[in-house]
Image (cartoon, rainbow, N blue to C red):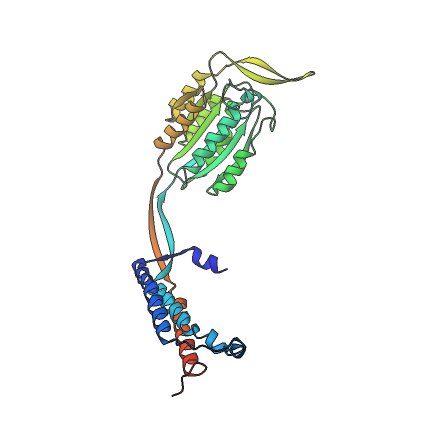
Amino acid sequence: MILDYFKNITFSQPWFFLLLLLLPVFIYWYASRSNKRLGSIIISDISAKGLGSWKSYLRHLLFILRLLAIVFITTALARPQTMFEDQHVDGEGVDIVLCIDVSGSMTAQDLTPNRLEAAKNVAIDFVNKRQTDRIAVVIFSGESFTQCPLTTDHRVLISAIENIRNGLLEDGTAIGSGLGTSVDRLRESKSKSKVIILLTDGENNGGLIDPQTAKEIAKAFQVKVYTIGVGTDGYAPQPVNTPMGVVMQQGKVSIDEKLLKEIAFETGGKYFRAKDNQGLSGIYAEINTLEKSKVDITSRTRYTEKFFPFAMIALGLIFFEMLLRFTVFRKFP
């Protein structure tokens, strides 16, 4: 409990602790003075038994109490205090939807450990850098689903991203449905800047909403869409379930770059191609710089003084030392 009290304490005038360097001087002076006062007498061993009293053993207590009082007075002079920083945010952040493909092809291992896990890792890193924005997560494959609605609670958001896995939805690649659901998350947003980051590794082959229709809806609600095509060129190793168990097969990388470029261009966004982990991280870093939050953070630091307990302990020690000096250890003429 005492350690917890000192945990958040700082000292505004720590140079007062230099006074503690005088303690060895005081101790040396006291020891020298005590030695001069002591006399010596030769007596027999038998008669010496029981001569020492409890007062003789505790005669140094007064000096110890005075030293402790000096220590606590010095600590009080150093002004111990706790600091509390209050932040006030003015302005407007960006409302962002991370739209992530979770189809079976996202388990391909041309990215480490695979495309989906790499996408989750960079998404979490992106979230950690957007402290003042509301962010949502939408996943899609053959259908789409809101994994997490718009929120500023980044712990909940990161937990939702970590729980994304392949097989949660019907397989396929419904880019239109994913984009449409993402726009719906932003439909009632009051933010002046609304952004979707859509990541996929395939071509649209399902869903209830056509990608062109979803694109027009995004334009109508003034939503900017950044699109990312993830996957290497040619073929990529992919685990496939067979009657003999899971085997690795080479799957062809087929990304509809024409569609993704069209969606990005017509909504005011930008298309990116990620062929490896470094490229994917760089893309999110670039989007992070392109979509800056327009906020002003005002910090106000408040200090609470904590010297009073130390001063009271010092006064208590001095009082106790004086009480003992004039009662128990009083010297009679």
